[in-house]
Amino acid sequence: MSVKMKVNYPKVKQDSSNRVYVDFIHNDKRYRLFNGSKINCNIYPNSYPLNKRIAIANTLASEVYNFLCSGKCISQFQKSKLIKSNMTDMDYLDVALEKKLKENHSDKYKSMLRFVHRGLSKVVVNQNITLKDINRMLFKYSSGVSFNTVKRHLNVLLNEAVRFGMEANPMIEIKSKKTKARLHKPFDNINEILTSIKEYNKQLYLCCLMTYGCLLRPHREIRELTWSDFSDDIKYIHLSGSRNKSGRNRIVPVPSYVRELLVKGEPHHNIFSGKPQPLNKDYFKTLWSRFKKQSNILEQGQTLYSFRHSGAIEIFKRTGSITKLQKAMGHSSINVSLTYLRGLEIAELKEEDMPMV
Image 1 (cartoon, helix red, strand yellow):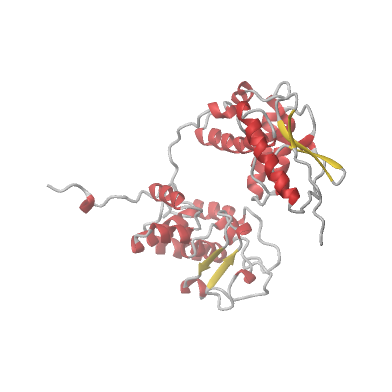
Image 2 (cartoon, one colour):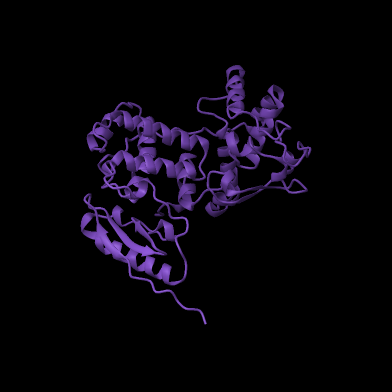
């Protein structure tokens, strides 16, 4: 008969910075947990207002107790910046950046997080982040798009820092700037454009055709494709969540007019470079810029993404289904697709939907 080890109920305590934590001894080691991440529990007491933290911490203590009573142990718990006393806001921000950089995000996203972290570090006076510091950083950007982009990424880091124990996110008082929507203008003459691109560069042509026909994003999802991403009959592309923006596994049909251009190579070779390594990340961006300079049929606002938008319009016009559009585009939710349709300037109401007299 197994003997169940006695577990003392964890205590809830509070440090000099009003951060609450769960204190307990297990296997002759003392632990202080400021949140439930070490027991796979989504409880962050210090992200709540001061008057609610103790109550939430008591809930965390209960979860920790149940976790330990089940016979599990916190074997990978190590002291880190997370449990140091007297941490400043910038200390929390450093920990937040470190955590986000370890997650599965694109290189571009991580680069932007580093950029905003450096920017804020330069304006913070005494290591504790104030609204004045945030304003000093953000209002250098006169462009609404740049302002909102920096604000959005900085907000990610600050929210993460609050989860680790930072007092509060000072950005909650700052509103985004209103900006005019910049549309990737769809093509009315898709065949003419594709023919012109085919004559200019065969690889750019294949990229554009797949952006239109497979609705994949050109600069990463298409550029990084290998032959192992295709089914044996090349009728489908299988992309894992780490390979696409939505973070979900995708299975994408390959139209016949794309398949007829594909000649399968070595499984782990890139379909464009013919090597294990893909072409450089700016390859298609550079090709498109050069094509655009010599073309006399492109209109203002038409980009590589216009092929994806044109394909989306085609799907919606043929099916009338937002759900099918969502699946085809790989959007994380229907709400994203609804926003996308507004951007595509598709009327949501038809004449027969209007009031009758």
